[in-house]
Amino acid sequence: MASQDDVRRIARALPGTTESKERFAFSVDTKGKPKGFVWVWLERIYPKKARVPQPEVIAVRVADQTEKAALLAADPDKFFTEPHYNGYPAVLVRLPKITQAELRQVITEAWRCQAPQPLVAAYDAGDVAPASALTRPRKHTTKAKAEPSTPSKPKSMRATTRKRR
Image (cartoon, rainbow, N blue to C red; front, side, top):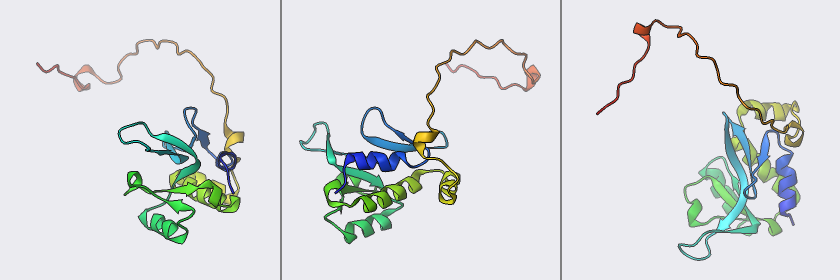
């Protein structure tokens, strides 16, 4: 039986992983954008009402629809989906039904789907530290206003914009 604590421990051990401050979700930066690979399932209990987090179920990314179908067919007690995820490469995982070893495999494969290839290669080679060791606090700095610079192109070559009326 796995728990959200296990999910957090496994996900944060993967390089480049960040945890959302707003909800239980993990992502990895790819080309400067966070790409989610595991998050809590938000179930729609009442039509036209807000979705409700279900802490015993997570959603994980998969490589494609073929992998999704294989997981769903392999063990419907552990893996399932809902209409919201139709056509989307993700499956829902019941945490009480999955072992920690299986959970580690599912989360690591989800991370591989979203992480940049150089990071995956470095991870496979054992060349990167876990995300917790890579994360550094961000410094808040104020930017000084830049001095206006002299254009490098002659005025005749610079693009001009016109206001449309």
